[in-house]
Length: 361
Image (cartoon, rainbow, N blue to C red; front, side, top):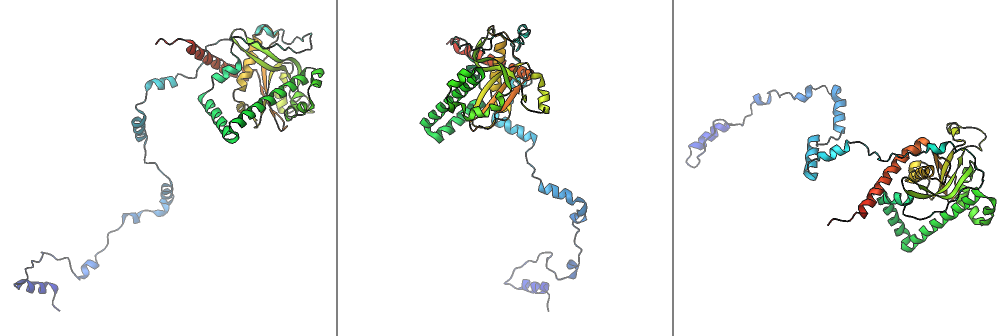
């Protein structure tokens, strides 16, 4: 059999074909190319057993392609360059109140433990004047998050109940709270007032909820009584001022009772609250601690009260009669909330000042 190259040469001599062979042709059946050794793969020389865990961890981990530099570039493109003024404000530290008014009043400390001649608790009527109330100050200085949560809750209730249904719901909640406070005032003051209440009010779930707390309350000094701070110029209506002795009716003393045994003989501002949802922690009561500590400071600087109060108590009662949650505030905790209350008071004062200042334009 003639080879392929010789056949091509004969065809090239013919006048019909003008084929110019390349210097070298890549077709060959020689065993040389087949027998040539293959190059070694460098990955075959890697010890797979040694690096298997490393490879598995790298493959299974999601690594972002972004770097700190790229993130800064994106922030600069979207929001602009970083302001140095804002950074300095953040590094300046927490806001400190400018008020130096103390929570306690040493002038009343000597007479606070002297028993009064009258067993009738104080009940000073609330007289409206130019002083703002504690409730108003807290409402006007709520944070943006608090306002958003309140508005979200209101919209959800309106969607569920409708406008008229929501109005009826809020009215019912107000009446229930009013009757609850009337029942507590009668139970803590005199038996004559207790007889005037109807059986439905006394046997309500709210009263049953706080029954175990009432056993630890004694020495009532004030009930539904108005109070005002003579220096800071605000007022309010306190629910109760009495001695709170936790676990006094228990046969044995627990560890918590031993920690709070020093409370005996000290007065306490008690604030009764109603709720449809459980509030087992003091952080669940929102601004109630600020309200209580504002009343504590006002009593200590009100000439109508000849005693000093150092503690506070928030009692959350439930409509279904389940045991109420009690949140006790000792003098140290009251001092911490007092600083927060002074900041809210300053914020309210500044807000009112800006609203009353005439616009120069």
